[in-house]
Length: 382
Image (cartoon, rainbow, N blue to C red; front, side, top):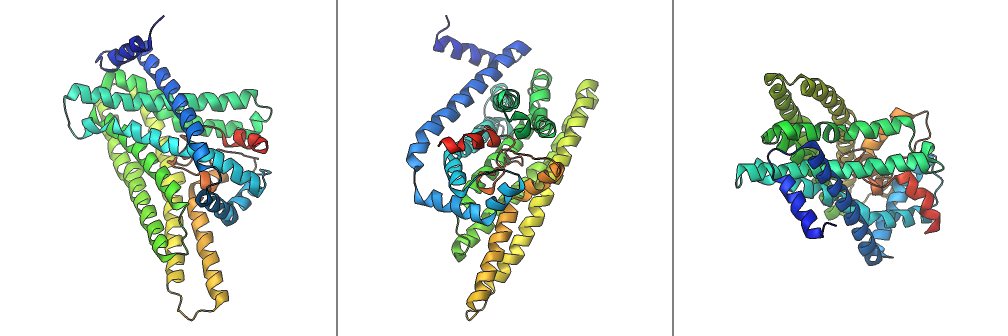
C-alpha cells in the first residue's frame, strides 16, 4: 500500500512531467477533487462554531432577507421562514469563504507563468496545476449535483434538465478542453492567462460579495465602500469576461487554426461562443445596468437636504435598499428568466449566498459546491 509520501511524490512527478499521459492527468484531477472536498469539510466544521450566533453575521443575513431574499424565495417557490433562512445562511457561510479561497488558489498557480518568474517549464507546470485544480473542483461539484438529481427524493425539482445543462455548459471549458489542451499546449501562456483571469475574477467577485453584504449602506462611509468595491468588481468583470476574454480566446483559437488542430478549433469555437454569450447576458449586462441604477439612487439619497422630512428620508432609504437588492440579484434575475415556467431551485439563489461565482452567476459561482436546494431540504433539521 502506498504511503502518503509515495502518493505525494507520484503526483509531483506527474505535475512536473512535460509529457504526461491522460490517465496520469486524471489522477491529479481526482486528487484535487478529494483535496477540495476535504478542505471544504475542514473549513465548514472549523468555522461554524466560531460564527455561531455572531451578531454581525445574523444582522447582515436578516437585512438581506428583508431586502429581497423573502420575495426571491417566494418567486422560486421555496418554502422557508426567516429563521430557517438565517439558519441555512449561517451554516452555508463557511462554504462561501472556501469557494473564493479555492478560486484564488487556482489563480495563484498561474502567476509565475504570466509574470515570467522562474524557470518557464516549472512555471508552466504550476499553471497546469491551476487548470487541474479547477477541473477537480468542478468534477466534485458536478458529482454532487448528479447525486442529488438521481438519489434525492426531490432531485428532479431541485435540478431540472435545463438547470443541469446550464451547469454542464458552465463547467465545460475547463472540464472538456482542459486536459487535451494541457497535453498539446501546456506551455502556451494564453492558456495560463485564461486560467488566471477566470479564477481570480470569480474569487474577487465572491470575496467582495461577502464583504459588501455586511455593509450598512445607510452609513455614508460604508455606502462609499459599497460603491468602490462594486466598481472594482465590475471593472474586473469587464476586463476578465469581456475585453481580455475576447483577446485571449481569439489568440487561442488562432493558435488552433495555425496548427491545423481542427478538433480543438471546432469544439473551442462552440464552447467559447456559449461562454461569451453567458459572460455578456448573465454577467456583464445585468451587473452594469443594476450598478448604474444603484449609483443614481444613491446619488439621490446622498443629495437629500438636511431638513428632508422623515417620510422622504425613509422612502429614499427604502429605494436605496431596493436598488442594492437588485444589484446583488443582477445575474440571478436574468438566469431566472430562462426558467420562468419552471419551479427552479438553484444554488446561491439568494443575495446573501450569491457569489461570482461569481463569478460568476451562477456564481459562482456556478462554480460552487453544494446544492442550494439540497441544503434547504435539510434546514429544518438544524
